[in-house]
Amino acid sequence: MLDKRLLVVSAQGGVGKSAVSAGLAQLATRQGKRVLVIDMGESAGLAAHLGVRDLVFDPIEVRPDLHAMRLIRSDSLIEYLTLQLSLKGLNRFSRVARAFDALATAAPAVREIISIGKVLWEVRERKWDLVIADAPPTGQIGSYLRAPRSISELVPTGRIERQAAWMGETLRDPDSTEMVIVSLAEELPTTETRQTLAWLETNELVPEPMVITNRVVPELATAAKGRGPVRDAAIHHRSVYVEQQKWLSELPPHVELPYLFGLLTPTEVAARLSDALEESL
Image (cartoon, rainbow, N blue to C red):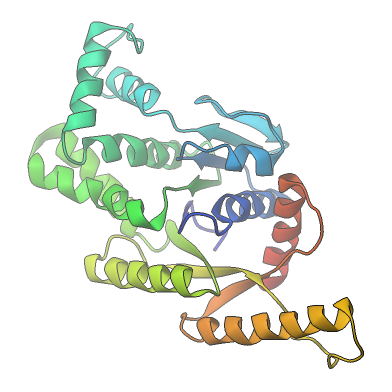
């Protein structure tokens, strides 16, 4: 998986998507890769798991060979207008930039193509061995993945259509792109993961995704004996294990990451998951 050029990581909210993204990024750098991880959302989750206070549009080096940035649509639009349409001297407050930003907000698929286009542009520039997109949740990711096709349908010829075409080809290329769905062994995340997998299979926008199931508890090796809180904890652990096994059977072959017990900072969580990913992958 880490030999691809692009990983797109999505999930239902609250299942550990940013932690897994950070863990994958750390693992890739340990394997000698130069990595860029992009926060496509608006939370501070990825920054926290990377151990930095905040991320900005320009990539910053958070550790050797690991860079991170936050996708800001207005800055992505200015970069696109400057590089692709040769409109020089723009900033987010200029009249032209504000007009295009209003269009991007209102027009279908334009907002999404600007965002996913920035991710794919970083892949195409080949400054990085691997680009990891901490992408929008599964309830929204479809519009981003379908944006190149939507733009091609709206603009059937010309430079914009050609750019949309290579974006779609890159997303569909199994040698370049891997889609990762993070789930939990619980009813709602499992149901949404299965629905997302079915939608992706029908629309053929990316190669067959990999599922990573987070926070899986191990089977207890001993029986619950005695009295008091230790026995109660053991009984609870066993009931959680049995329930999780039920939902794990509903998912396709997948990678399992452990439930991390104890008080851990977001940075420590990402480091532990990185080690677990190394063992699993």
